[in-house]
Image (cartoon, rainbow, N blue to C red):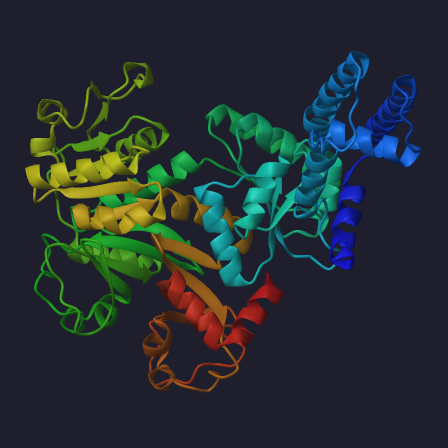
Length: 571
């Protein structure tokens, strides 16, 4: 038992500071002095009564009385002795039951617990860690970044300046390091000079300080910072940020891109490996009711089909995919090929139909600016009058009120974009708008990834997760053309051709069946072949441009780990 308790007391001793040890030693000395004084007075009073006891007995009596045990085998006969017994009893009980436990807890136990908690949260990274990602905050966006880093096999560390919070995150499985975010030594210990990315995602002032401090320690590091206010962008760039991302603008532009397209025209949502990734609504075109094989888009126009959205359900493009009024095709093509697509299918839509935006925050205003750049009319429903900004058509009120929706023009609107930061409100309004206008296009925002599927079930045509969209914007800053987010959880990504697949045809590889990934294009020595021939062997040393969910990409990397290793070496 003593052997088992030895390490525990050793750890407690190590966790107690020299100052606290002095306090404990002082209290222990006081206790010994009290026992010595009371034992001496015991002898004096007993001699006065004519009784004689040994010093061992006097110490025995003192301790049994102070601890309130009081066996009663040794007693005083005089009033003086009994009064002395009461004094010893009260002094001992006060000291042993109040003072000593308080001092022990305050100066021994709590410091030991703090020291134990601190040991769970390191103050520096191991020297063998490099090519890692450094995070300075831990919210939905950063959690999505951690998921992406784990899938890509990239180590990460979260800097936390509060020990209890760091310990709590450590217990949740997060890789944390304790350090003040305004201390240059923190970033040296985090080895920022060997990191692939430092993400400053706090408020604008904190981000400026973080970027400036990191840049002094790592002149060549890739630092991506977020900015809430437009005016902060220039300041953070002057501090040394490699790239400054306005997450509200990113999400707003993405939501607007998902909303546009009622005229059959393609709308670019991203660029990947020299190809334009675009969306186009099928409604109103002669593609409605056709199978993709019958449409022959690649043969006639050269555009590649990645997949088809049908009210939130994504389907990988196959020849048997049927196009309906609610279908939105995802295209991969050059600018010239998209222009050819537009000439074939674009038509004049009723430009007078307005767009309704629910929520006048940063995201809602960004959506409005995107609509304005397209020459579209829109109105913003905002519940708080103080958030109304000049230069836009606002309707102040609760969007759950039918009269407010009518005033904003919902009855004639082509689409409604729901941008509030409360998922419960967004689900409620999606259900409400779908019941009022079954034919309207609804694009909704999800703060948490777990509510994406709920919003689709509520009736949204497209849902964009704040965490997924904004984490992709940060991720793409250092991954370059490694990943492009198409929709929540659905990415276009590129990977080296695994050694197992070199010389194997796509038809024989069964990639989609085994992993859920679909090959969009094959690149070899800078030349991209879109929608590659399934009967053509995959080239050794080439790269695959694929589309799939996060889970599908993970399955691919698990089945072909050499591709993951080669990607890490390239980045």
